[in-house]
Amino acid sequence: MERRGGRSGPRTAPGLSACALPTATRPVTMVAVLGGRGVLRLRLLLSALKPGIHVPRAGPAAAFGTSVTSAKVAVNGVQLHYQQTGEGGHAVLLLPGMLGSGETDFGPQLKNLNKKLFTVVAWDPRGYGHSRPPDRDFPADFFERDAKDAVDLLKALKFKKVSLLGWSDGGITALIAAAKYPSYIHKMVIWGANAYVTDEDSMIYEGIRDVSKWSERTRKPLEALYGYDYFARTCEKWVDGIRQFKRLPDGNICRHLLPQVQCPTLIVHGEKDPLVPRFHADFIHEHVKGSRLHLMPEGKHNLHLRFANEFNRLAEGFLQ
Image (tube, rainbow, N blue to C red; front, side, top):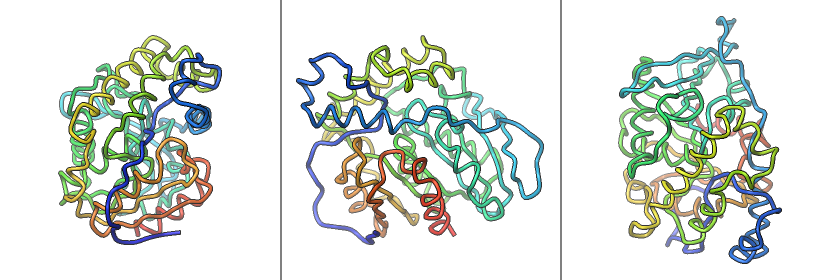
């Protein structure tokens, strides 16, 4: 199901953002704060995480760019890690979510997006994945910093123009990049993103601060990538970093930038996403001129992983 153009008036219902949350075996205080429906959303979030997805990090180029290679490039004072595959003339950057990386968040896209049509790059934002050091931090402009890093990385790799596929926090970064660097962004697909933070978001963020309360299945892959101490410390810092937007007028992250987006934009929303309610996708759709909204009736937060073939076909069709 797809809709074009804008709609009148933003939604005001409370929202849920993209982040890793504890299991149903949590203190009673969380149940009291969030209620039964909120607890169900927290439980469903665990199924929306993507442990165990790995992509080869290096290898010789194969016919039609079927291998995935990796490297680091100096950008804005840090060494940014990226993976690259394909040899098509259309460059596409994959932007991961909170605590994510290219190899954990985009296995099916790195493997199966059309390598004759696209050159696909998946990056690790500074402080995430293999773009360490430095440690990840969250100043007031961390999304803007990620947007600049992403664009400057692609320029360092000599791409003249790129399209963006951004998930969750990466979708927010993509929106900011498209608004601030309009001449460089060709097209954009985003899902699981939100342009502002609500009171309920803030409560949920606080509920995930202690990673020891997460399920082992969710926690282990991130511990393997980061080590427990860095993982736990970075999650706490992320909670503080994302909650700071609630103190701004209207909980603003990037809502003021949406009218500045000029590139063709596809917003994908999973109707069963327990983390980012439909009104967030509607709000972005209403304020990005000419955008298209595609609804996946069975899609959850990680729809690009659970329904990878459908998502890849949708993205390829839009980008061509």
